[in-house]
Image (cartoon, rainbow, N blue to C red):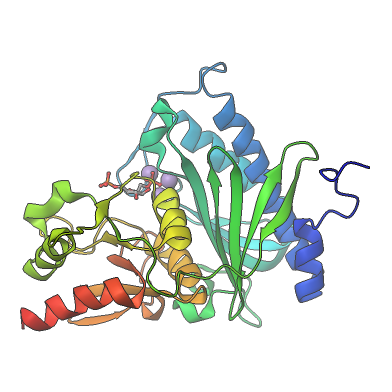
Length: 335
Ligand code: AHG
Ligand code: MN
Ligand code: MN
Ligand code: MN
């Protein structure tokens, strides 16, 4: 028999069942996986199916919606509403939360960015989906308060990267970070990366940020980025402009990812509930650091923030101690 044919596929459902014995969670993850497969198909066929370009609307955070933003959003909403295990959905593409009808409602509340990096879609650069999952409070019918909680309450966080391979990475609260690749020959996500760890030594010397915003940053961030470029062996700059791709690379190769607050955007750009918290949970549970930088008077963890609005934003500085240390030193040096 061929070595490449798996007679015992380590599928996503099998992993979730074995790990948690929670059938609702198995159903939730399989509904999410269904939407990721649908999004994969739409992204792959974008050129031939004429899915490039704008949908003509502006979303909750002021972005021009792409056709694929709208389509990916519909795919996720349809899969999650009909899963029978969700009560409240929050999406980047919907101003208001979505409440699941009572006859289909279940214990989870899910926040998601259906298509992250959608400005990259028309030139076929990697995009992704990001999600965070919460459980309804006991007795709650499902309200936004079930989601407006600090990252300590997030029960599951993850992303799916649509690229040369389609890869799903997620973690349960307090658990390890696990990676699954979509095997197109069987249409299943299979377990390919076990217990993913942020490189212990900080990994490759890479800094990742939109340096076009340099003049808007505060001095400590400007100085830290200058520091990365100094010396005989300066850091390499890598910035896709799709958070999923930039964080996936940072998790695998190391380095630092920065989207700080600046003079124009006092809270940064990235959205707390469906970009900041889930990515912070993955980076931290893989052994890295996810800081806000100086925000609201202190330098704290992204996971300690309690969102006050479903679409609120937060600054993000993620990496290992080697590189985050350079940013912290810069705050100290600048008083
Ligand atoms: P989205 O496409 O979901 O609106 O997210 C865009 C985000 C994120 O993907 C990316 O890292 C960042 O915006 C890029 O912002 P800049 O273009 O300002 O660098
Ligand atoms: Mn957007
Ligand atoms: Mn995004
Ligand atoms: Mn998006």
